[in-house]
Length: 380
Ligand SMILES: Cc1ncc(COP(=O)(O)O)c(C=O)c1O
Image (cartoon, rainbow, N blue to C red; front, side):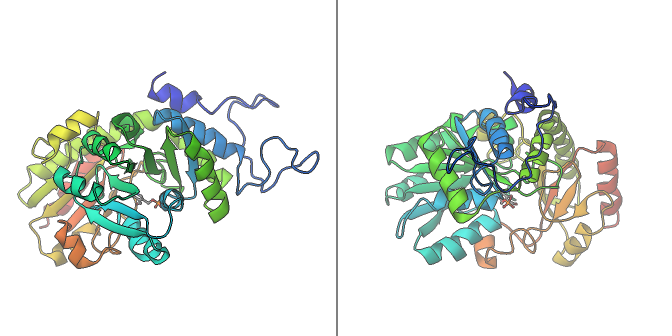
C-alpha cells in the first residue's frame, strides 16, 4: 500500500457501533470498568485513548515502523525517549538542532544529570570520535532547522550500531513522505506533528516511531508517568490533516522549489539554503536519502539587520510567526524567535547568523506567493 492510501485508511476504520465513516472523537478522561481492572483496553486517557491508538497506527505505517506513541508535542516525544536514560548517561546531540530541543538538553536534562555534548553530524570523523566516548544516544535532525543541513543518516546509523549507540532522527522537516530514517537504520524517528503531519497550524503534537517493539511499553509508560499525553481532539484533528498529506507535500515541494529559485536569482540575496538546489553543499546526500525537499527555504539577504527585521514584517501572504509546515505561508527570524534559546555565540559558531530568515512556503498559488515576495523586495 502506498503513502496516501495508508494515510487515509490505516488506523481509520469506520466506527463499529454506528458505521460512521470517520471514527469519533473519544473526548473522555476515563472508561467504565466491569470489575476492577476489567475493561476494554483503556482505563484513563493519560495512559491511552482510541484516538491515540488510531493515529499511532497511521503514523507507524507512514514511517514504515512497527510501533508508534503519540505525545502532547515534539518536545514531549523527545522527553519520553530521554527519560528512559539515567544520571550520568551520555547523549550526543547534533550542533544544529531546533532551539527548543537544544534548550531541553541544556536547561532541563542537564539538571537531571544527563551528560550531553554536541557534534557536527556532517563530519563523520567527528561523529565517530564522539561514538567512542560511550554515549547511550545520538540525536540529530536532517534536514536541520533552520539551515537545512543534511547528514548522511545511513553512514551515521551504521557507525552507531558498531558502537552500540541508539540513534534518534528528528524527521519533522523531511516528513515520512520524503524520507524514512528507520529504513536508513535509525532506531527512532521523532516528529513535531505540529508541523507538516498536522499540516494546518491548529494543533501541537509529537510522535516517536520505532521498529523496537519492546520500546512501545517504555514510551507509553513515559507518556503516562510524566503526563505527556495529547488531547483526543488534537489527535483527531491530526488524523484529519494527515489524510491530505501526500498532496500537500507535493505542493509544498513544488512551491518551495520555485521560491528557492526566485531567491537564488535575486540580486538582494546573499545565500539561499534549500536542499533541492544543486548549489546546496549536501545536494548529493539529499538526493540519495530523500525523494523531495518539503517547503522550507532559508535566506540571507544583502541587507542590514535592521532592514531584514523590517522585511520580515512586510509581507501580505507570508505571516510573521513561529512554527512551519502548515498550508499557509509563514516567515520567521530564527535568531530572535525560534532559535533565541540558543546562546548567540553558539548560534554563530554553527552558522546561524542574525540576518537569516526562514520561509515556510505554503500551498497557496505560487504566482501570488512570488508576487508577495517581489513586491516587498522591490522596496529594498
Ligand atoms: C525540527 C523540530 N523538532 C522539534 C520541534 C518541537 O516540536 P513542538 O513544538 O511540537 O514541541 C520543532 C518545533 O518547531 C521543530 O521545528
